Amino acid sequence: MKWVWFVALVLALTCVSLSHQGQHPDADIEDNEFAEFEEFDEDEPDDTVTDDRTEHTLPDGAASMDTDVDEDDATVEDEDDEFDHFTDDEEFEGFDKERPGKGQSKEKPPDLKITKIPLHLRTNWDSFLMEMLMLAGLGVYFLNFLAGKSKNHKLAQAWLTSHRELLDSNFSLVGDDGTSTEAQPGVLMKESDNVYALWCSGRTCVEGMLVELKLLKRQDLVNTISRIFKPASDQIMVTVNMDPNAMEKFVFAVALKRTCGKLSREMNDLSLFCQEKKASDRFDLPQNYQMLSEIGEATTAIMDKKVCQLLTKYEGLVEYMHFSDQFSGPKPQDDSQPSKLPDGKPVLIFCFNLPGKGSTSTADMEDLKPLLRLVFYCVDKVSKMNLSKEARSKAEKHRQKAEETFLKQAHTQRQEAAQLRREEKRRAEKERILNEEDPEKARKLEEREHRKEMKKKHPKIKTAQDLVCSP
Image (tube, rainbow, N blue to C red; front, top):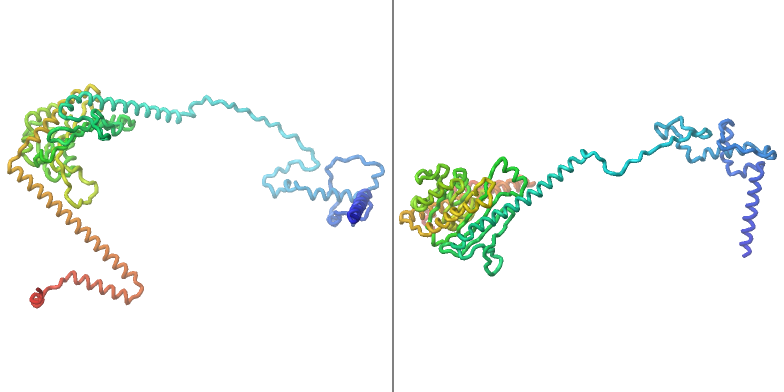
């Protein structure tokens, strides 16, 4: 513990000596901690040192103090001022030189008043014009969706209600959705907001009948606006799948002129077996209709007086009638040829337009019953039709010719594909020869390729000796 007391005593003496040095300015200048700045202080004139501190009245006894020490202290404080760089003109561009410096009186800063802005909404509604238009558009779209969806549902239900008795009298099951093991009649399937379907089965010579109500997209505002410039009609599509043994071999179609050409181009069976359009003057049909027929005997049997009168009465409502034992749907969109002739199935297709050109009402559904009766009349007529031997032989020849044409087209396409593959292989071989770095190896590859080409151009001819030696 003695060394502790010794250190404490040394520290006390050091503090006393330092305090005495601060009280006597005549002390040795070597003990001053600012002695290293004296050389600079001596070179500077006396008038450069200014003291911006407030002068205090000194007592009489302190007048004899050395003024050099005070000037040194003031000079050191000015040089060590940490805010001097803010007054440097080169440090700040556009610095206000008239800014009051040290020792100058500072002016009172101006009294800035901040205007208080109210927090409530502004009454200028023009700033929200775009938002209001968007909200109005969304409201109109939503209301049109509800109104269009409701109207389509009412039209579909009105059609089913008005035709339910006629359907029940021709089929044992009407409206089965096929989702349950037990039959549930009277179900109108909703495929979308504008498409409804009804499946019927249980009739002689018929596997089933599908009724599709393809109504306009009234729930879509864009479609509703477009119909103002291009009117359209609701349609009912009836597809009857016939029993294969209950229909003769023939292809026939009668349609409006604007639809007949489209069917001839798009439908596979019509483009194969009915390439020529025939006028409807022979059967006293309106000029607006055209026919596509394969067998004239079948056309005469179908287009009797009753059918012609109904087409004349409901001109425009009957879009087309398409009967075919080789129905395979529309042609493929791409140019690829299928590997085999598509299997056709016997169907009767009817397409009816609803009256009103888009403004159909539920009361108009009752007037469409004769069109559904036309469907059942044609089904019975086709199932009872018996063609002559000549007509059957002609139909068979047409199918054989169509199959041969199809096979030739398929063979041609296969040859073209093989030729493309050979050209691609030859091109790859030439690129490999060009990319070969060894010239000797490249020369050998080129000679081998040349021999192959010459062999293909000049096939080997068998001599008499080869014929004798051959078995």
